[in-house]
Length: 467
Ligand code: GDG
Image (cartoon, rainbow, N blue to C red; front, side):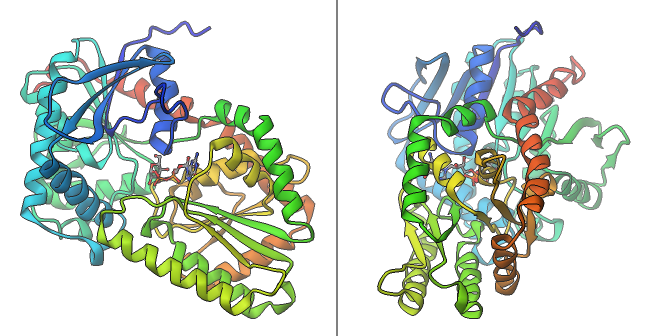
């Protein structure tokens, strides 16, 4: 039993993906992370329904102990705010892809308009003692807009994606306005020290701010806290999935279909930040340079499409279709397919069974705030015969997963060498690498993350917070 006082938590994110009667399994990193936290505090999760339509009062639904409240957004807002500023401007920029970043004044207008709508709709539902926690790059200005309504609650913000280097961020028109808005929050959280320090760099060089030894940041008259607080998986729930009949049956099916062959697995939203092209190229390099391995190994890549209305996502999908076809065309044999490339999702328990059957987990993002797949792969392994995690050094998870074989995802040779190393790694070394990672994944899970963040937020100085 928990005996700490449970302040009601209000979570606000772009999309609400709390489970519903129609869709009982929560999907996606953020959804999986927050459901447990809300259940514990009888909180409310606010956000966009994902539907286009006139914005009206939020629809409240409670399912399995979690209350969600959603609004629709007009088509134009969806295009400018979500497809536009969030997914064509901030996402690529914050993932170091200036080449894919689109700068449109209409996008910025839509972004500010929708944040305003969120503030207007949600503000009246916030009670004075609620703890308010805003999530991710879609809603950076929301805290500032809530303050303008006079809210003096403790309001926190967590960024799930990387914070970009100052020189990249300054390419964004009105970047200072965006960062200024962050100073309306009491606490801002980043996934890793690296992103936190990159943020410090902006504060020092662009805002003339000061970083205190205690983690406070002062710009002008405003002092806030900024922390590194790595997100974890819902470890308990994952263990239930992992040990379920569905997972065991999937594991058996995978083992049977892999006889004599080692399975390498990748699971990612189809996104250019995940380094899928580079992964395929690294695997191709492995096959080119190790002909003796042919027919003894295969890569299963699960990549459900996302953000399909954005051109750069259509492009990456077409490139992956071509590349996977080329790899199979060049290397397949009458009784062996080197790459199984699947463009749809699977239930969590099925994924858990696949992870466990895989000798190697291949996680190669070019940049990633954290990457929960790396942690899920570790959590799914057999303690007596664990697989090897190959992980990009540019994923936030690399800071914690020190037993992984770290690679540079831009180097096909590096990936190819790592695959060989993983497939030939002795059992003793696999166990020695895996165990501390497993302990970390189980200890620093999503509940740990939520508590760490909300503890810091609850301790933020009270009073005088309205700007
Ligand atoms: C953002 C940040 C950060 C994937 N395919 C299926 C499926 N998934 C699940 C995975 C995992 C989640 O989606 C993906 O989480 P990631 O962390 O890998 O990536 P993003 O979606 O980009 O999330 C990221 C995260 O926020 C949390 O802060 O770690 O850096 O980019 O849980 O398992 N789930 C199911 N079927 C699939 O086919 N059920």
